[in-house]
Amino acid sequence: MATQTVIAYPWSQDVPALNDFLTKVFGAVEKERAVGSAGGYHTELLIGDTLLMVGGGGAGVTWTGEARPMAFHIYVPDVDTTWKLAQEQGAESLQAPANQEWGERTANVKDLSGNFWYIATFQGSNYFSDGAPTVQPFLQPLRAAPVIDFMKAAFAANELGRATTPEGVILHTTVKIGNSAMELIDAVGIYQPMPGRFFVTVEDADYSYALALASGAKPVSPPADQPYGARVGGVEDIAGNLWYVASELKK
Image 1 (cartoon, helix red, strand yellow):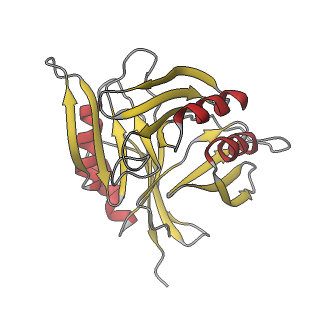
Image 2: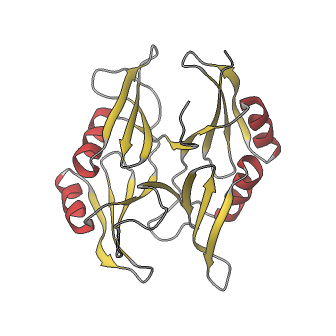
């Protein structure tokens, strides 16, 4: 079982191409690659200190699933260089590099699989904000508050700080689940909902699955033992995010 509590799991129609992009632009290291019996890739990559899973299809693989791109905040040593490199690798620029009042220089791109990458260099002694992981999933539902409430109820999430407008619109907040962090805003402009897919390590998959349902989620797949040594169940929250709770099988 993974030691990272929450692992983001975007799906792409062309996993090898996406992984190649992540390797060339962000220095990702692919740790695992497998093709399932029903067709489709499962891969695991390490970017800095953050593990991602990437699944879906690719050349020569029969896969009938639906792409599920996500948004991410990623820290890099030089945002300007990375922004240019991402475009050289086929990404679309969403925002040119600019200094921000919160102490970061940022630029945003959209890769060929549809994932948004909010690239940042922290303007301090380190290029990353103190205590932040290299990559954080970034959720932008129509309304973030109900999603945050669900994460608190289902996964004992801890909200670290919330910035809002006078009208209550969430401009930014960070939520921790176990040792993992993600960021949320209310959707605005081109940054519209991109429901995520997450693999969450828990103590007891059956208990966490039942708790998630009691907290307002819809069932996707009941807990079942898997050949890779985990018991896994899936739910969908009010904003369409998929959460797969997994606990280690007892030996």
